[in-house]
Each structure stands twice: as C-alpha cells, then as structure tokens.
Length: 118
Image 1: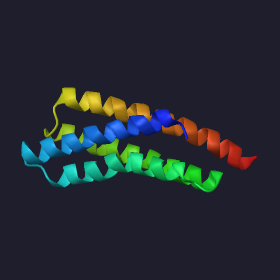
Image 2 (image 1 turned 30 degrees about the vertical axis):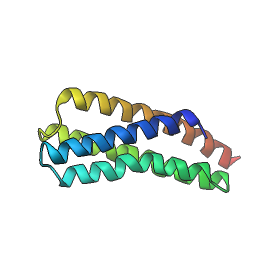
Image 3 (image 1 turned 45 degrees about the horizontal axis):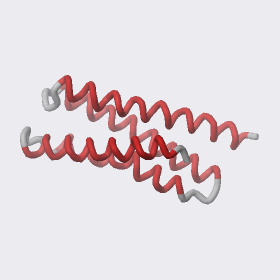
Image 4 (image 1 turned 90 degrees about the vertical axis):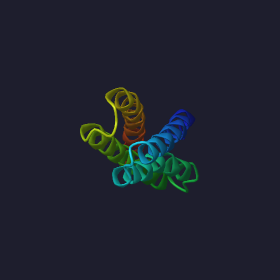
C-alpha cells in the first residue's frame, strides 16, 4: 500500500471532522454534514482495510471503495458550497485535497486491475 495516500487520507479525515464540527456548531447544518463525515472519513478507513488485504483482488476492492467514497465526498462538498453552507475558500482547499487523493487512488486501481487481468 502506498503509505503516502494513507497519510493523506488520514489528514483529510481530520479536516472532514473539523469541517463537520464547524458545520454543525456554527452553521447548524446537520444533514449534509453527516453525509460528508461518513464518506470523508471512510476513505482512510477503507485504505486501512486494504492494508490487511488477503489477496490482490481484496486489496483492489477496498481501494475501489475508498475511491468511490472520495467521489461521494466531493459531491457533498460541492453541495455544501452551492447551498451556501461552505465558503468558497474552504471549499477550494478541501476539494483540492479530495481531488488529489482521488487521483492517487485511481492510479493505484489502474495498476492493480492490470495486475489482476494478467
């Protein structure tokens, strides 16, 4: 497992937890922020599971879930921005991190899927 992506996902999860805290305490937004915290923290959790994978297919499946959770997180971030709950500067910063993690995960997936097909 690429420990760089795990570390980035962990730091990202911390940002998500802090964003959730802000959204619930300051903006009094509870529905979208709950979805955000579920998907945003799930990225790293699935990578932690991938570290314990018993096969390449198991590893690839967990990374695939992490990638999909990353895409979902980007959706919730966009929705929070477009509904006025998240300011553009905060959105840009956290979305950029999500996008970077997503690109790394996709790259890992392409490599493991090629290996699986051989």
